[in-house]
Image 1 (spheres, one colour):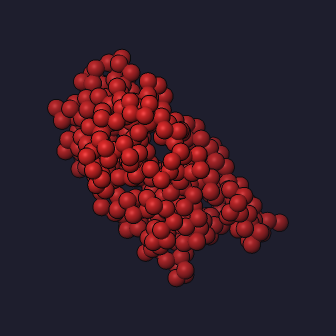
Image 2 (cartoon, rainbow, N blue to C red):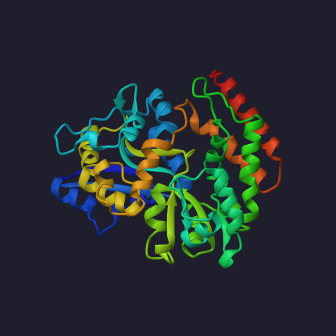
Image 3 (spheres, rainbow, N blue to C red):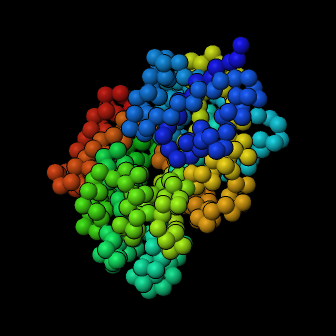
Length: 387
């Protein structure tokens, strides 16, 4: 009788490659090992709740996908996930995984995730219009002030909006984060994990971000990954800030005039590594580790990374499969930074999404948004004795 392994995965471009029949990644493993890997992909909007049910023992998934530094520390402290065992054979070549990614998926020197893909901010632009607006070829690195200037100059050209923003309530805080960092501050203090955004520089950053509304499509407050993809592909926006892990989809055959698309690093970018964690409740930890060693091996990373646009291994970037690989690799290795590993990170960030979105749609002022978010976070921390 064959063994069964249950995996809960988030609905992101990289993840669909694992179950895509063109690549037979999971089917090949099932046949070779006489197993059945049940690989369930769940949309982002539903994922967190289902993941928590699995980690709390309400459902029986052996493996779940975890967003690196956002949840890792919290899940380890709560005993939700087990330390993992990377394959020891040379072919797995753990050091081929980018150092920044390896650092993120470990805690206190021990690995807890098998890395799947690394998402981070990347700017896409229509070269012909952008170079005209900029006055020449764009550099590889563009700060948010320059992006605002370009959006203003390009707005209305060829009937396009200046920029697409990922301003849906479930996305907007991270869309705003590079603008905050551009003013020299971060959302949370790295030592105390206290909120640090509610100050003059934070207000200036939010006002700059909100200034882009007039250069973006009117329904930008509803835009998530797919809406940004469509707007840029269909030449309804001249600029777009999206994730590295979305580039394979944004640059597929639906994209008009792909040869006119350029890519740039945002020096204040955020990034996160999504990886596979072994549920502490699983009775199949050995099977899970064996399967995940296969799923994150070099040959699979090249396929999955090319499909999504954001591999995790140096050898995959060296293939030159995509024109944006050098930009994305440089962003991950030299520019993009994660947030601090915090207790209750998801709960702490939640008020920022809510109140920044309210400011974006004009229900409250930028100052009110930052104050309300700070108050809620401090109340949460006080209630949990984490101040």
